[in-house]
Figure 1 (cartoon, rainbow, N blue to C red):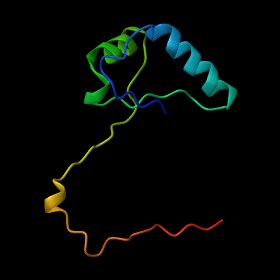
Figure 2 (figure 1 turned 180 degrees about the vertical axis):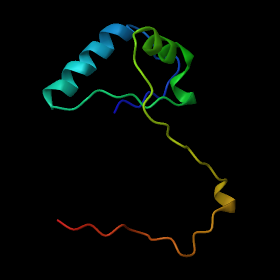
Figure 3 (figure 1 turned 135 degrees about the horizontal axis):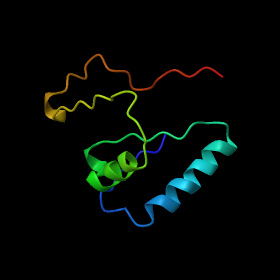
Figure 4 (figure 1 turned 45 degrees about the vertical axis):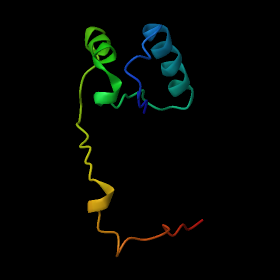
Length: 81
């Protein structure tokens, strides 16, 4: 998925979406966007006007690091090849 993180990065939206779509198509993947407050309203309105639809919602949670309980946290996630 595309994760827009700069609300001011809106130049040439249609062309950039077209390029992203072709790249995702080349890999056999559907183009999806994860829209968050960091995406800004311009991109969201553009996608709406082009007929893109919302199919699910992501929940972003936050916590001040000073409040985090990390005693039982793992330092590394075990990987298996």
